[in-house]
Length: 591
Image (spheres, one colour):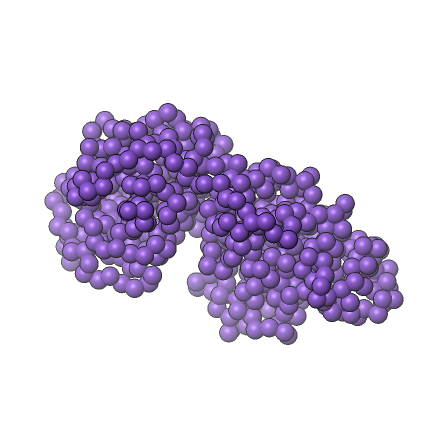
């Protein structure tokens, strides 16, 4: 988009290389930056000490701490421990470890929930608990699914259930959501069949009609949309390409429920330390961020949420959560404004196209089809840490890829007199953008462009702000047949670096990560409607500026993340073959 001329002349373009994310100085705090022991059993005891060492806890969850298939039984117990604010103690299956026995005694535990059957938590463990005068509530079932139902039923005895989370797989997705689910009083149900829920879960859910909130963590390989529709017509799915993408999707989706005063980092492969940390995190409404040991896919997003007093804590020793994994989040060793990230095939979705000013997703119709409507929603990003005159824009539009014609609407964010300002705009290229209204930073915008039902030449641009309709704010637009023919050839959901009247890019604002939801064209998901292409903003010197995430399993959600701001400050917008300022650079060429 082009800014209005009056904005260009009133606020001069200042080309200064500022840091996008100034290094966060975390507060000196008694809270540790690593909780670990020599084994996973020691680590679990240390976590329990951190949360309940002073107050004690008469009740605890006792779970098998062996990595592997037996751990799956315990994963659903994270929400139980979180909801009841009790620790999770880990033990070996064939003997109550001395560490576990000592911790149970230290915390004055008199009752434990045992999350596995006798084949996993064996009789010698139960005998040892009896010797300590600790009563046992057995929750183990025939399999992990039945165990999760037993745990849900036990939760319902003490709290009012507000919703259900369904997940499966190795358990990493359960760790991603467990602290949030517990804090929101939602049991986690474990399924191992995408096309048909296990009988235990199906029977349980069929008997519950008062709960309407369902969340699916993981893609359709976990549970199909058709299967889930039998229980809820409005379930919400958070998923990604892998467990680490899903972790990011969960953090973004439940953003309003998370407090980033504390952040816990756990290994997404071993899982056991993350399980022990779930109730501690839930008590603080803190997220659990997954790492493969060194890399953190959600690192940039989480870093953007930190304050000067945030504390980032590793769950487990350096072998499972390295110092580098912590630095990615806490000190931004991946600082987006220092140096740059050359574009490689490993840091972008497959078949990502390059642009000098766009990042997001493009959809082009199948042969014989055309586009007559587009929708999407996003939250207006906070760019307050950006330099003067820095700008960014989020929008949906039709056209502009295979044609110079483009009809679009969205929000533009800029720094004016040191303050972040956001405005709704619409634009019909080649005319400049028209400012509609100012909206608060953090507003949720849902936008729609569609051909009028009354006349094929009339197009309506409508939007809501925080769910409130802004009817009549933008007048209907009458388009010439040739213009309509142009805009029907593509649909876009884009984060952009705006330009001035001379097609010069403004300094890119630090907009962090922007999550796009409900992205549809002709009422369909991107996958269903046409050919999908992710696009990344790349500087003239070849550095990645804004990166798109992998498209969600629903085909309607993704995010864009600013990787760098420093490399674009002297960039003149690249021109396409038609001389259109909006044209994509090397469109169709793989990165």
